Picture 1 (cartoon, rainbow, N blue to C red):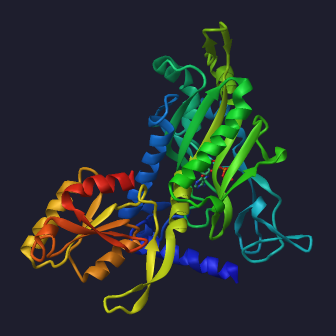
Picture 2 (picture 1 turned 180 degrees about the vertical axis):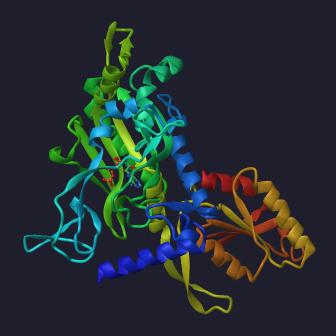
Picture 3 (picture 1 turned 30 degrees about the horizontal axis):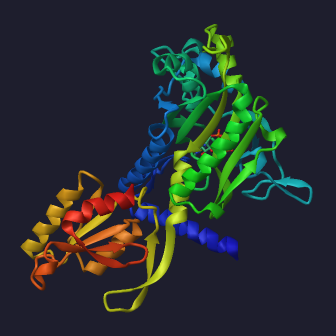
Length: 453
Ligand code: ATP
């Protein structure tokens, strides 16, 4: 029963995403392309707000982290040294009955027999390794010498630029390098809407430290990252920390946590926080022949730093934000009759549009002019949306459904027609409680800025 309701909830979310312009299927008019998605006018805002909050918390509000932006295509040698060319694989199985291509760990086992989750068939091939990197050629000749890959993670650019960034930023250990960017994986089985895509964005921090600090910093970053999710409006009780067992961890990692979220389709990973030891820098030092050591001025020692990596997915977090925000409640319509209201209860900090501005009537010049003045007043500080069409209740509903946390209505009291004390005041409506307060226009920017930042 619970599964059906959760499946229905997910269907409603996917349909809202398309209807209101959060997420569309990529290349839709040509039948789409599996595992690829486009963000529409509201989706792009949500995504940008998430990324800029991550950047604010992880880079701007800290003294010990700097940012960078690496290229997507890199020298093939990077992927050889990092191990991706040889080992970035998933075990793949084919179902001979329905021809489905499956990840071996997605096969279901019933009464001791392995079954295809699509058709239930038992005629499956043996698992074989499938490299998830997209191969491409750089330059005009398509031969072995021009092969490289679209990066499957952003982290490697940070490792190979470690020395340059260290030299220019003059940071002392412990310090981090942060990056947000696209990554590509030719996933065998993309699914669950945008959750497992073939092109996605990552927000990664490589936090370099001394070996003896690694374990402590792993704990520290796990806690920091949990706080982050709470600060963007994800309930703590829907977040879970999985300690990745020894046998599933990369051989070089001394500890990995997965931060998981209760999606409607099950509990799934949002972010990995991994203590990767000195593996990556050592590999690149060995393969490139260039020193990636750190010189400790106090002890006069040279060594390769260890690293703790919180690696989060932008798209998965956006999906979690939408799933978390989606709700239905009962609210009175124009005539006072109760109706179902769809509300995206986004935290104001990440909501795509911060505030709707509505003149009570669209055919009253003074109301319209005042509302437009308010739009001009707020625009330098936040993304606002002006709407004059339809009954005011319907305009509120449209904004509720896309998660706009505040609505400003300009009415006859604003014009001072009823009570001169109310001249140049407006109603400020809050999305979740639907409560309205009367606020002076001159105070609007300060009030809203304090609530959305
Ligand atoms: P999974 O086990 O789900 O494939 P992973 O453990 O391989 O993920 P990492 O390599 O740790 O993932 O990547 C870090 C983060 O990047 C993940 O926590 C996730 O948020 C994001 N990510 C990885 N693969 C995808 C994908 N195919 N689609 C969307 N986001 C992804």
